[in-house]
Length: 311
Image (tube, rainbow, N blue to C red; front, side):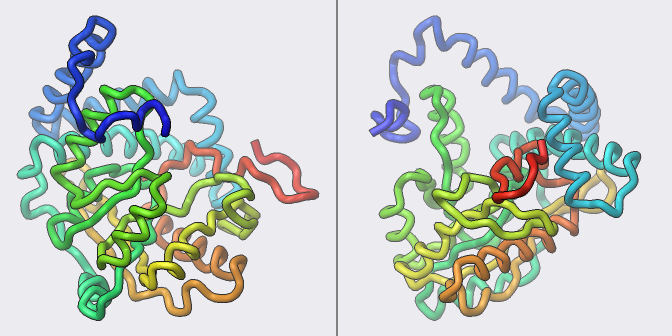
């Protein structure tokens, strides 16, 4: 059992009052204060913070630019840079949207709608659990909150190394998700699927080939996880694509939750074919709002034999 999981998730510990955690408390109080600001101020702060991050986080900036260059070859260098900067803006906006979801959820009232809810409802009515194939959206937990207005979502999460930060995030998320499942708790994940849960799962990052296969992502070979195939096979759950995004006037935004039909014959007998299908689903989702994804992750860090490093 890892250090950060040697306690009950979300549990307060008296040691959190020690001086070494005071900086964390100050940061938390500061973040809560940001949540009560009007959107117009949050919007301006997000743009300012994005500009600072673009200037200071050189590695993340280079990764974002490179990812967009290879995934959108039809874009000019100027278009790549413009959209890469928007990724940083959307990330900062997503931080404020998440704070609003945690502390001021009424801000989202009359700002959202859903399409395709019947796909989840029909699957659960037939006794199936649902693995929601989503992405690492810049909306963060704001997307989870939007989903929770229509159905009861569960989420797979990776515990924080800082136990106090882990407690804080877990408690905030507890207001949104029915269950939070540790990414290492495969038994718990399978149990929830067998119980008919709807779990948000994002197979869109590079975890190497020990947990996946090479499959094209925007036409570029990429290590693609295959764990969801085992989850679906063992639990008899179904795979349903899920996407949520911001649209309209960014100064007065709206939000949409898009749920697509069940992915038929998933898992199939061919894990590479399944990986290709999942990547195509994610590609189609990202083309709807290209800058609302975490492009600063090294999606192509694992290279196929004979291919040069992208980064």
